[in-house]
Image (cartoon, rainbow, N blue to C red; front, side, top):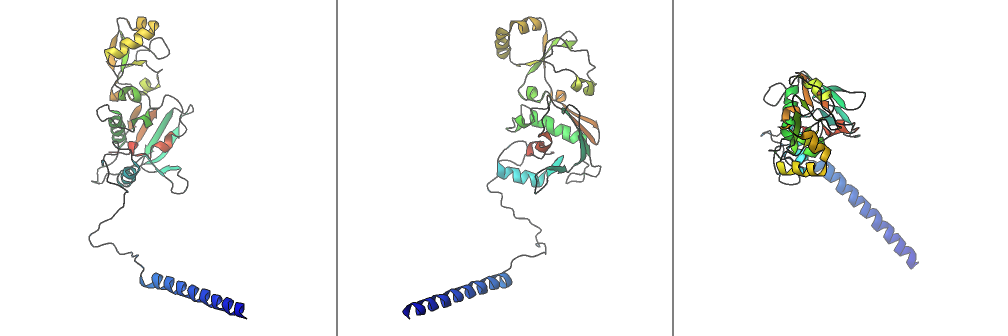
Length: 262
């Protein structure tokens, strides 16, 4: 008899607890709901970034809190599909990949604009990438783009080896004479050899490779410039990027803050 009373009392206690919890939830949902579709009068968005940003320059810092801010402030050629994280069109409405996987051509929307109303063009993306690889900026994210032709050499302050009107090639031999203005042919040509920009670095390379030392004898050293990087504005709404070798994930990299347009 005593056991039945205890079980009965426990059942009543459980029922009372459930009723209390349901009442509390109903009260919370109906009387304490804080959502609204009315914009705040001061037109201000409060955003929890997770930490004080190191910089508002997307090419500079590489922390996750900063990246979230950059993604909300700066446009990119692509964005990430929220569920799959696949690359989807953004400033670039479409793109093509060359047969060998080393050439990417992005076609920009003709209505893309900066926050001040100025149109976004392919020249802005070329500027952004050249700036990102500049040794002076010293971006910690620059290595993400090292698959782009001559980007690492420019970032590291390396030089070409020019012998007369031709250049030493990475695989040996000399390059064909290419008009300086023909950037398309230059990027498609066999890769030029690049070596250390400082004399000490070159001496070390020559001491380790006598054939290289002999091939470079009497030649001059020409700095790799921003204009040599494998990024080309074909026209105002077409960006062409040339890589050293195929990189299947290269499209997805363009949502990273390093590639976001400034």
